[in-house]
Length: 159
Image (tube, rainbow, N blue to C red; front, top):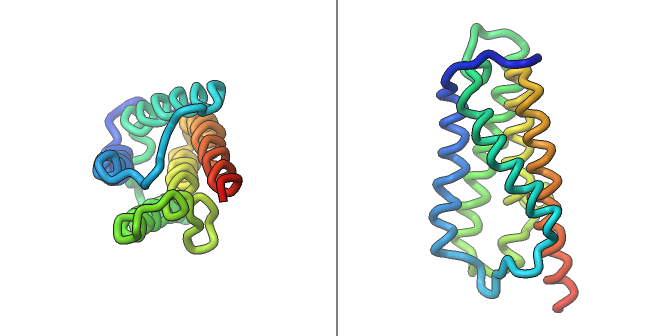
């Protein structure tokens, strides 16, 4: 479960699905959004997890499509979560782009904008059997989802 070095086109596809909407978002942030007062430990874990997840996504060929087996269902599940993530973005961009829209639940998944890609990359790590990816995504999830939880709580307190 260590991973084979080599370029992953699947990882690149997942990263494009992650980055493109985020680049668009940078010009269409929700009204009142701020990243001030974020927990420094969560922010550190998020940044570390982001860097490691991006690197793992690209440098392990284990994520590429292999011969079809039941294990391939992990890749299909990972891809479906990324598709849900894309649909969530469409939903967000068509909304009034309030903070409540950004931290919304989608198809019963809380904080979907943070949770969906974390689940997708974790499932990709399971598919590839790459422990480094699983660790990276756990760090990312703790930081990224943790920060989103804090932001959501601050919105609820402001109401």
